[in-house]
Image (cartoon, rainbow, N blue to C red):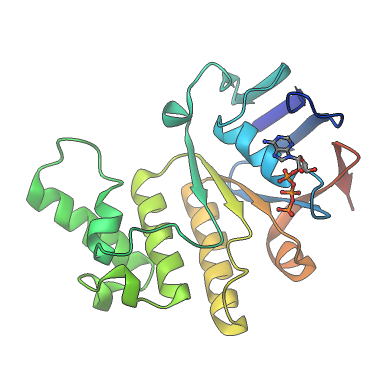
Length: 213
Ligand SMILES: Nc1ncnc2c1ncn2[C@@H]1O[C@H](COP(=O)(O)OP(=O)(O)OP(=O)(O)O)[C@@H](O)[C@H]1O
């Protein structure tokens, strides 16, 4: 279980402050909604380690995550767009998620396997700039799958997609979350996405999270 307990943060010199408490279960999507400017990106930055809280705790199954710098946190991040290097192929973008010193042939077969799982076996060598928005998100999910970190942070990951693609990527996120046992935290304005995915929902307002029905 991913647990934030009174994670307290204030931007230097700013008047507003945040105090975040929530839990996110393994193999499930936890949704965070809130108005523009309510602090959703701030929360994700704290979870990813890009911002440091003034006090409080953040643990994954009891392990203190605040002690870890961003690159050592068991966390992957998927944004609305700009997840890929445009000039690299789908396979090369995914290969960035391989552990260092993976043998070339082994790496290629691991990359092929995850691209296959996200339905992109026909696009392995395609340059990212020529992929559709949905295909790009699939590539980013394949890389996440390869890294297989236990926490997946999603920041409006479906917003740039048309309805049909959005439903397909949404279903893929839910399937991977359940199968891999990820703790997936979804930040979204869209009630439709939240209703389709979330096991637990929180509303962010006034600097705190409130569990919503
Ligand atoms: N570096 C910063 N220094 C001071 N204040 C900041 C900084 N970054 C964000 N803020 C302020 O903190 C508040 C929360 O911002 P944040 O980006 O977390 O909101 P959000 O809910 O993600 O908004 P949106 O939905 O529009 O992306 C805003 O009032 C914003 O102006």
